[in-house]
Amino acid sequence: MKIVIKACEYEEFIKKSRFIGVISPCQSEPEAFALLKTLHAQHPNASHIVYAYRIQTTDGLVCRFYDAGEPSGTAGKPIFQHLEGKQLINLVVAVIRYFGGVKLGAGGLTRAYGNIAGQVIDSAEIVEYVERVVLQLSLAYNQLQMLEYQLKKLDGEIVQQDFAEQIRVRVRLPKHHLATFRLTFQ
Image (cartoon, rainbow, N blue to C red; front, side):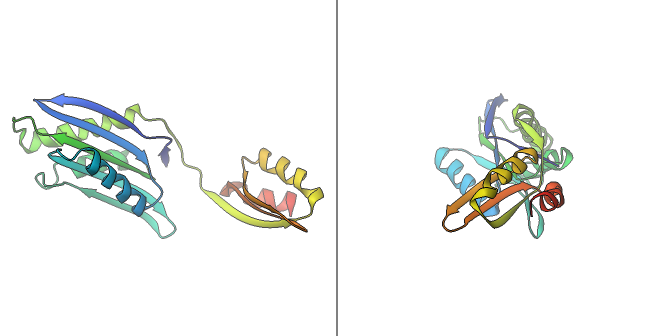
């Protein structure tokens, strides 16, 4: 599976209609809805704002698409098919349409929304998805340097640290390095 690193846009005119494709990383459905709400606020005069997303959660993969009033299956589904075909997760792709007066028909709409989604995906920076785990540890001050060294070797990071009698740290590292980390550090 793959993820997108940062948000980007792609714009094109098709038979006088303006299409704006937006791709954005997203970790949860509430985050997806917040992004869509922002797009509606930024484009209050848009004819349609269609979208699709795939988000990996602890309960599994959440997939949704929405046609926003376009004929059923002509808008959200072509976007979703790109996400599914390229095995993309934890992202939202939305296409904003400003109607230009020329009807495209069902086939034309499907091609237009699908092509815009494909273009914005192609313009995005995409990397392999690495599942990460978060651990909480308590350690002595003399162990901190060794922890930092191990995390650097295993592509991990310290997310939070509190200094008291002992150091309480929260670390994040790739799940596939968890066994190695536990063998070498704990």
